[in-house]
Amino acid sequence: MITAGIDIGSTTIKVAILDQDRVLASLVAPAGGLPAETARSIFRQALDQTGVAESGLAAIATTGYGRRLVDFGDLVMTEIKACAAGVRHCLPADTIRTIIDVGGQDTKVIALTPEGDIEEFSMNDKCAAGTGRFLEMLAAKLGLAYEEFVSAAVGSLQTVLQMNATCAVFAESEVVGLLARGEPKGDIAAAAHHAIASRIASMVRRVAYPEQACFVGGGARNQALVKTVEEHLNASVRIPDTPQTVVAIGAAVCAQRKLQNRGTTTGTEI
Image (cartoon, rainbow, N blue to C red; front, side, top):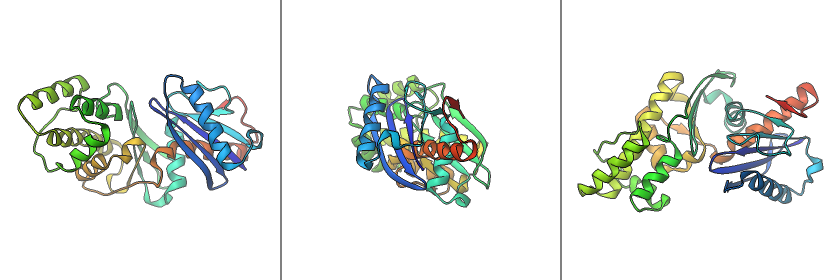
């Protein structure tokens, strides 16, 4: 049984094609100004990589911020459900009780039961602070490309600078003030990562299990953020091989489960 999962996020779109337990293809692309068209384009690219025709798919599942924007899916699901299923597929089920998902416009922490079901979750979706977009904004304020911003932070993670990550606007003002004081850009970048990591760690402690955590989403590709989160949790975190596509993989997994359990998917939401 071959299924597809399409995760339409605020900044990137991810597609995964799954044949039972095997990922045949997975792609990530910027969402751009027309995310529905981008989703269709990279979906076709993924199919081309596998040699599977669209008619050969048992089901297509959409999830994420823009999950209702596409018109070629068979079922729609929340990213919370897809994320949990994706992590369970990508990592040993008995080792993960907490999922940290840092995306472009929100941060989610999901607690799992020992069986891998969703126990509780918390989402930071009221403000850009603590998200990928927040870090991109601060990098631009420092006049650094995002990769330069992360590298600078990695080299200064022992900084003692303090920054407020509870409000994106205030943090941006703080960056201006720190630059005016002559603080090194690397130290400012490190302080920003520590502030975000502290916020994430607080979310984890409220709902989940710090000692059995994994990190997914675009934020998991940020080495400085991973290191500071581990420091604030005082625990190591697991990272899947392709952290950005975990939710898309989970959507494909859920589509398979629905077909197996009910036999049909058309027009449904789970």
